[in-house]
Image 1 (cartoon, rainbow, N blue to C red):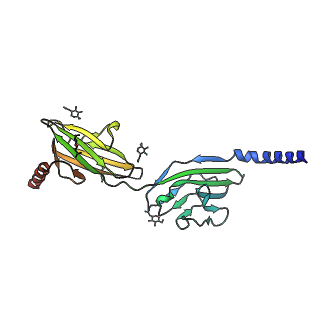
Image 2: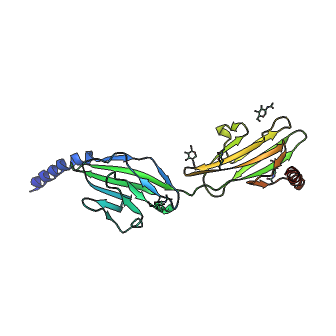
Image 3: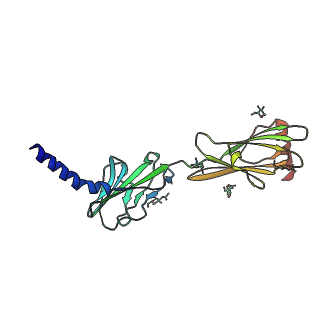
Length: 239
Ligand SMILES: *[C@@H]1O[C@H](CO)[C@@H](O)[C@H](O)[C@H]1NC(C)=O
Ligand SMILES: *[C@@H]1O[C@H](CO)[C@@H](O)[C@H](O)[C@H]1NC(C)=O
Ligand SMILES: *[C@@H]1O[C@H](CO)[C@@H](O)[C@H](O)[C@H]1NC(C)=O
Ligand SMILES: *[C@@H]1O[C@H](CO)[C@@H](O)[C@H](O)[C@H]1NC(C)=O
Ligand SMILES: *[C@@H]1O[C@H](CO)[C@@H](O)[C@H](O)[C@H]1NC(C)=O
């Protein structure tokens, strides 16, 4: 009795083993989307001989399943927002929400019983707002010390500063830029560009001389009053 049972389980194992080894898992690159937008989760080549397709939102939540005939959409938040393209296996999602961020899973069963699995991470991000450049300048005898801060609230972004003749080296790319102007040597403009994987925005400030800013949008004044009045007056005279 005991030995028979042992034989049985051994046979079962031999039958199951090959299938365990033929399940392949492929990690796709991360997809990005903005709230309210549309996104298509696609794989490069769907096996021709597939028998069934299942898209998962998480490991235990199915979005849609196809075996034959029409795909079956499960009663999830994706019910009216997701569409499966049977030819390519692509899952189209419209009106994307932040909560849709997840690592999606496509499981494909081939007619050989082998299984292929794709993992596609989706990150839903707000576009970045237009940055505001704050200027703190300290006028010295023959120089002007500048602290330029590019301000973005509560959102991870990357900063890129540009001056008149190009961008700054990578190690200086931070939210704050420190510069020293002299009357002989200064940049007439600075641009702060902020970006995340879904968007990019920038603001520019301009200097009319080494320590005088031209009035422009996207600048928060931290200079002293007389300076502001002088530049405003200059601008009025010019226009
Ligand atoms: C999203 O897709 C729907 C349906 O295909 C379309 O009507 C809509 O304009 C698309 N929206 C965007 C932001 O692309
Ligand atoms: C401006 O920068 C100077 C020198 O770094 C500093 O002492 C001062 O507190 C700053 N002012 C403001 C308003 O941040
Ligand atoms: C002008 O300023 C830039 C940047 O601060 C510096 O690299 C360059 O050497 C300066 N040139 C002169 C002539 O001071
Ligand atoms: C910033 O840039 C790095 C390197 O290019 C990138 O890995 C990272 O995702 C970026 N972060 C944002 C918020 O865009
Ligand atoms: C700044 O934004 C404008 C459009 O808003 C774009 O044309 C320009 O190329 C951007 N400049 C930089 C340096 O990112």
